[in-house]
Amino acid sequence: MSAVGANPTDPTHAAVIEGYLRAFKMPGALRVYLPLAEEAKTQGHSYLAYLADLLTREAENRRANQMAQRLRQAKLPTAKTLDTFDFAAVRSLNRPRILNLSQGDFLRAHENVILLGPSGLGKTHLGAGICQALIYQGFRTRFTTAARLMEELAAAQRRGELQKTLRSWARYDLVMVDEIGYVPFTPDGARVMFQFFAEAYERQSLLVTSNLTFARWVDVFGDPTMTAALLDRLTHRAHIFTLDGESYRLRQAKQQRSSASAP
Image (cartoon, rainbow, N blue to C red; front, side):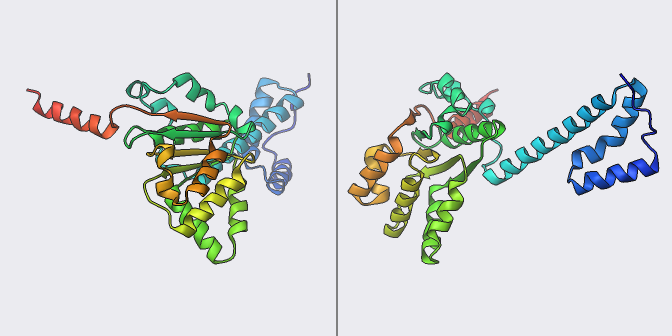
């Protein structure tokens, strides 16, 4: 196999290569093409081996940038991963089923995930952890609270831009709607939220958390008929988990009191 024989630091060659790498928007390759050329010459690598190594570095750089961009776009709460979730404290959860969700098969089938249970059991942590794991699988996810989403959709409707806003949410593989039940919706807010859920039905996946049982969702949406229609769509082909146990914050408070009273 022939080695790279040209001097990799030759100013003429370097200028031409650098110009093309900039024009082709290949910053990963731009950073390493000279060191890799030096290494190829020293190690006696072939031209094709050098080129393969250079393109691999560029591909890795692009993947890393895409991942970082998707993490920023997801707007997830502070770093919460499945690795740091305390499954032992929420024994009602089926850990293998949760971890299986992180592979993304339910997204391909446009299925939903619903996490129900009292405050303080880690529903937000669990949902955000699933979202982050899916980003590393190559999917696009987005986090929002129910109250924030309602405000955004209601404002878009007042501007006459509701459909445009709904289309912007539809580009994600998974939308996590956190904290349904903490704030009752206004009548207009309930209607645009219903439209959001209806638009997503069997087109994209939703991950929803709520501190209320389904029977009490009418307290949030107001209209019994609309609530029933929404739940029919949301729970069809859904993975539903009910979290039971002691609040994380309560457990932490007990631990702190125990530590403070220890001799």
